[in-house]
Length: 177
Image 1: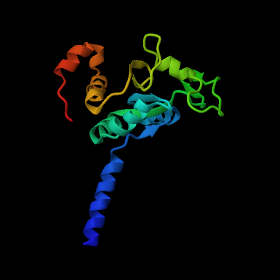
Image 2: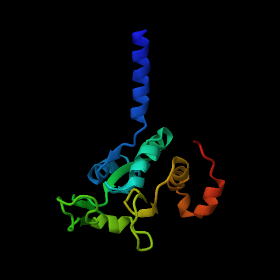
Image 3: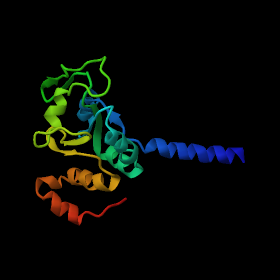
Image 4: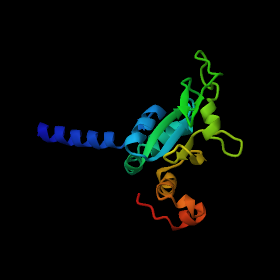
């Protein structure tokens, strides 16, 4: 009986651990791109952002969403107010206003302004979709449930953005969730 319970717990624990996005740094993504080019998804978040935490807990931990992202993208979780310099697109982005002693909101990273800006505004969370050359396809701001992010993921992977309007794609999209 104990062996059956242990086996069941092991299977459950394994399936839970598989329901996570394989987050990488930009440096890790650049190395992985040399072996297998893929599109990139960047979760631009802050430590104090409630909707960012909800995205992690409810959306990125959804088994189908996590699996689809892991199969089709390289995923970067990027702290929009973090101190680490990022070398991408032939440029080094930094956060000169970062204060290590500050609690709560901090300086906005230069990369955040470069990739997560929508109509002159920064909001958290922002999910930025990029092609294999780190060109921005689109940034999407705000909390999204699995059923809301699913068609966007497919829109990018299918490269429908190249010849189709988002509204038309979204209307015809059939969820697999």
